[in-house]
Image (cartoon, rainbow, N blue to C red; front, side, top):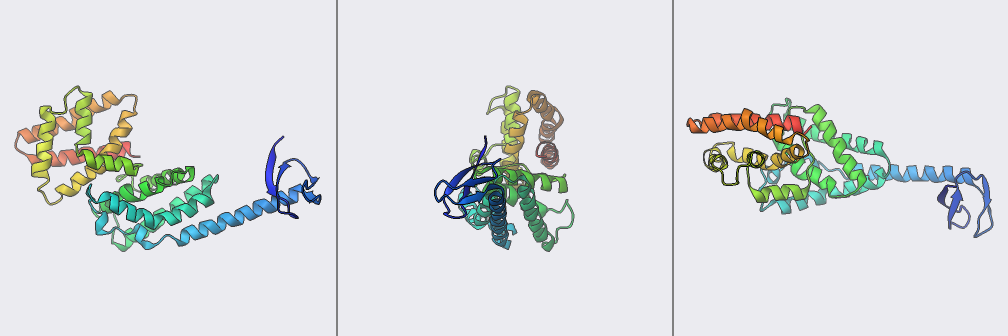
Length: 301
């Protein structure tokens, strides 16, 4: 027999009620109770509480949560913890209310994710972003991956996990050429600390090449020299630090990971190295960026 917890409508004490019972007597105050009426009233009260919590969550979504500030652009390792803490403090009150309202309700995650996406869309529209190839869209992708999604996951509840998944699904369906992956604060912090070409390192490791192999050294020299000195080089390097670990993590879980890394080596990294050897770093940069974009579209969706 299944039991349901409810309060006696007379003495307000907790009762364990058989869910198939109709009329009982309270064991504390001996007053009669019609079980189905009591449970219906309890469900109605719970729905009212959830609705109130959701309204409070929505009211706490300030514009600052969806605005790309200079502090959120191309974030560096030494300032990331502080800026993430500041952002988390801004969005956490709304997320906590959402988690309370969404407990056990899958549809609530889709609703709240839709609200978050619409608010980002509103800010992007106000910024003049109209097309998916607008370079300013990168700033929003960067902010969402480094701040918004990790702040959601910091709540550490099933409702928060569902919210992150639902939001990313909406984004990736709307922006298939600029997909986002799920990221935690710890994973991003580790990525900043390692300062490696994650994809080239993973590929070379898969092929049995050491961390100091000639190929990796050539890419690092190119990254820290010519590429870092270009107008968009540092921003692109920050993008690689942010997105590459998520790509590598997805590939590493694939059953054909060795084949995938071999294809990346043959189709992308070898041509990049050839361009460097030919004294054409600009072509190498274009080839590497094309590789990253293709991998994002394939592995972050």
